[in-house]
Image (cartoon, rainbow, N blue to C red):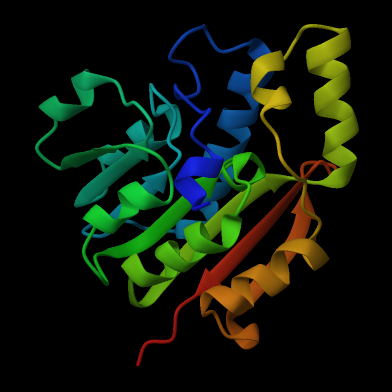
Length: 211
């Protein structure tokens, strides 16, 4: 069974069938701040936002500064096609990423995506493939501590999107995501993994060798 078949139950993107909750929006805002800080100046750079969500709330902030942004998810809002510097790739991850050329992006962002994947290795390998030499992968995922918070917020308080949390396959601490990044092709010296957001999330900043 390939990765697409394992994830075929995913029929819609985040925010496509229901409005994002306040907690969801706050989490996206925090992640967007982190991405902007980690990326620095993205003027003239090409960015891929994998699992961007239907409205692509975070990726939209990058459109005004990046040379080009690729939005990748099951479904993406059609209004993004109006932007000359945007490309839309709709389909299951990671197979839809095959449509993107090798070494096409300076930055690849995966915000709250890998926890939905039964087989994340293929997705990370595709991220490595579409990065230019010297490019950067930014990953943000809920940690095992974050699991309790998300489930309490979604299942008990109703403040988070419960269906999204029910779709989670795994959570990641730095020790969990680090070996997957190495297997994808990143060298240990080029990987930084830490927790943030009060330990509720794990992030990874990975640089691809320039040559």
